[in-house]
Length: 407
Image (cartoon, rainbow, N blue to C red; front, top):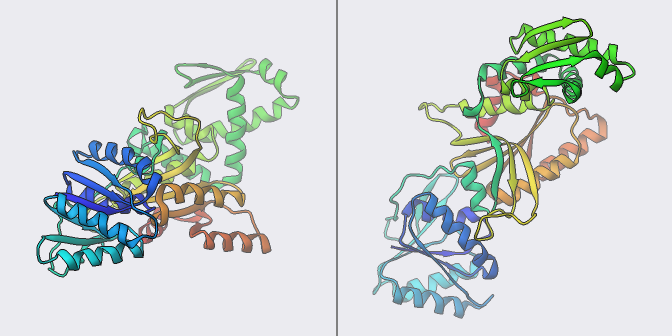
């Protein structure tokens, strides 16, 4: 079977029929150089998904319905079996398809269908009541979705790579009790790790007071804050063997996940959201999100060249990037004040790697805005279709799950 696509700006519209039909050939009509540049990325993604199809591009003159009709006629006369996907394409292309269908419907078996992203069903568009659907509704991974849009994931943390997810919950319990204090303590602890002696792959830490006094004029005060924080972590089982000896103190992080959690202020909320997203189930016991990655470093142009290498294009880090079937969900997690620019950064990466189908959330433990500043921030978020979840530290896991289920 040959699938014919009218090239659309949203990559998922160009590939949804390919994912569901597993055709031998996919022909893209229109789109010009943009379509030709994306063809290789589409083909490579299809191969990784087990779809061995040939991808072709047919150029047509812009705004020429006759040229489109001629192109479609040629495809019908040369391809043995065609299914025309009307999910993408502009009005002119759809009118041209209607003209061609009327001319050849009695002499050729022409199938036309359109995918509905809301109902997750393929709709018949040729009047025979049948659709060509061979495969179940596809679930894309985070990496596949980014690849579909011409990029690559350079780095990211998956829930199954966390050493112990109970540690994530323990750290969040401390963080949510006093987010501002958590931010200050983790920042100070990170500074101390900068001059401490590290052993056992960085998990065992020895802080010499002499090195601290050489670094800080008020070292004794800062030392007291760090030790108080470490004691709270020890009580939670996140830090082991905390000892104070003459002119130094030492301790051990429980594992590498804990070290990441407590040495960067925002990691506790990010890891907590990853834990919630990756463990959510629907009424049938199936995972709500098909894939999720925390700290996803996305290279915008990673797959636009044939060797898959990047050439210095834009790079963004997404706090949590999840997939709900074929719908990407971009989540920005902020454990402190949120700058207005965060909305624009979130929107930019979501628009590029999800187009109009992307869902965008900003989850914060405190926006730290009042009056007109808060009003302006919320208005801008609404204009950009970014859902704001404030005071996350006051919400239960179930509260957050309910919010995520509605997106």
